[in-house]
Amino acid sequence: MQYRFSVEEMCECLGLSRSGFYDWQLRRPSQRRTEEAAHKIRIAELHRQARGRYGHRPIYHHLKEEGVACGRERTLRLMKELGIEGIQKKGFKPLGTNSRHGLG
Image 1: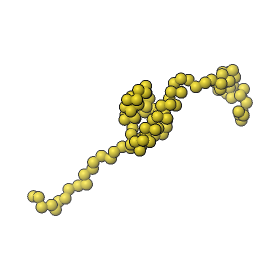
Image 2: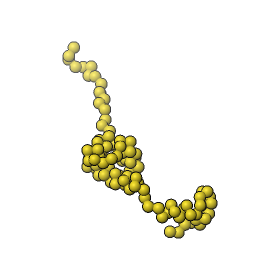
Image 3: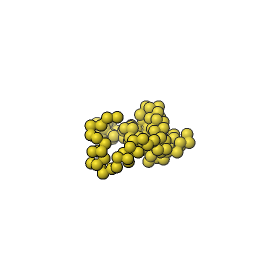
Image 4: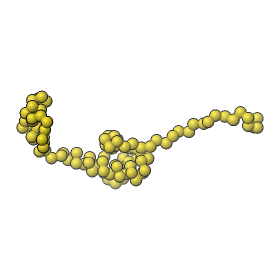
């Protein structure tokens, strides 16, 4: 990988050690990050199956039924990271009254 600035300059600017940078670069993803990647795939799949109608609560309940350990707030955060949200049903709005009806 080639950088516009040298690693030494970037680390100095950010107040980091070069060895810390190289350690970070070679580090494997954490178990949580790996789990969340799998959760994101399933969340996107459920959202697509529901034709975009499901929000975080129904998706959370589906995951819970499947035995996936993913809380409601975590589901919401992952959906935000994916840029997906449920479609809200429009509320009922009366159009007004008909003053010319013959009812009284």
